[in-house]
Structure formats: C-alpha cells, structure tokens
Length: 262
Image 1 (cartoon, rainbow, N blue to C red):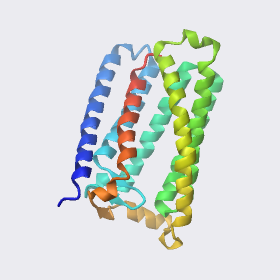
Image 2: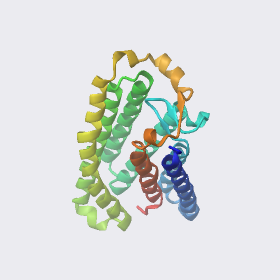
Image 3: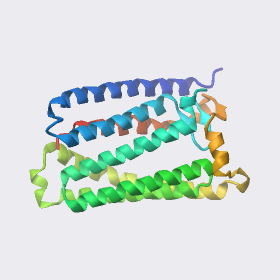
C-alpha cells in the first residue's frame, strides 16, 4: 500500500493554485498598465506581489522542512538553502506590501517612519530565523516569531486608528475593505502567535538536546543538500495546514493588494 497518496495529491493541488495565482497576477498587471505612470505605488505594489507570488509558487511546488532537512523532491530547488532564501525575499516583500498599503491609507511622515522601522525589524526576524536553521538553536525562532507577533499588534493598532479617524468616511471603498479585513484578521493572528507559535518554539528550545546543535558552518553544509527525500504522508501531514493557507490565502491577499484602488 502506498503511503504518499495524500501528500502527492496535496502537492498537485498547490501546483494548480500556484499556476492560477500567477495567471491572475499577470491579468492584474495587464489591467494596470495604463495607470502605472500616473500611479507609481500601484506598480510597486504589483512588483512586490509578483515577488511574493513567485516565491510561494516555487516553495509550494518544491516543499521542504527546514529543521530536519527533508525535501519533497530530490532537486536543488527543493533544498533548504533555496527555500529559505526564497522565503526571506517573499516575506520581506509581503511586509513591504503591507507597509505601502498602510501608507496609502494614511500618507503621513509618522506612518512612513513606523513602516520603515517595522520592515527593518522584520529583517532582524529573518536573520534570527537563519540562526536557528543553521544551528538548530530554537532561540532564534523565538525572537523571530515574537517580532511577527509584535508586527501583528502594530498592524492592529495602525488600522484601528485609521478606522476611527475623521477621514475614514472619505477613503476609497478598497481602502475601507483593507482596514476592515485587517481589523478582523489581526486579533486571531495575534492570539495564535502568542498562545501557540511563540510558546511552541520556546518549548522546543528545551527539548532539543545539545548534541543536536551545530555550528553555522556545519549547518550550512547540511542545507546545501537534502538529507532525506520523502513524500511519506506521515511526515508531511503536520505541514499541510499551514503551507496550504500560506501558499493560497496569503498569495490571494497579495494579489488583491496589487490591484486595490487606493
């Protein structure tokens, strides 16, 4: 009896949606061509969305597990070093995309400064992530996820202030939809990060034996290749929920932000 039926079907579903998302983003880009010269930020948002979508497409097509160096396919594009590098580019692009959207809603010097600081903190988060991946020391992930948690809190505070500001009534319909969706999505995200994600990595820090820790050089040698290649359902079942949501719902949000008229 085969033990990879579910994982192979799941991977095919991700490939299908990734193809559909790329096509949708190209359609958005074609529709925006006449306005790009007049609306420079539209073009920037589309480009950032393109970076995020392409990165998610590759990662959805070639899944991998960073900590255990497990690859879905025996291919260089499925290795941790490729996947993690793409994740850095994609996540920073998505953070910049949100910053541009927040700035368009409230284009003040203070909002611009806050967005720049927030984006810089996410660069720190990516650095901490690399530290944990290379060394297996989960403290880097604790700091990384804590920064993502604080980013969610900052987003909630920002959209709350915009939602109740005097100029809210004059905002375009898409801007209002962005604020409402963010206001609804931020609390469950914050709760998940605070109650599940950060404590999980904190617990893993104590569970991983010191014998499993590596130097950065040793870790780099590991992530250059796949230590294990498998499609076994039991190894991918835990990854399926978050990867499916990340590579589908998050990408559709990025595509919508690329075409939103505000």
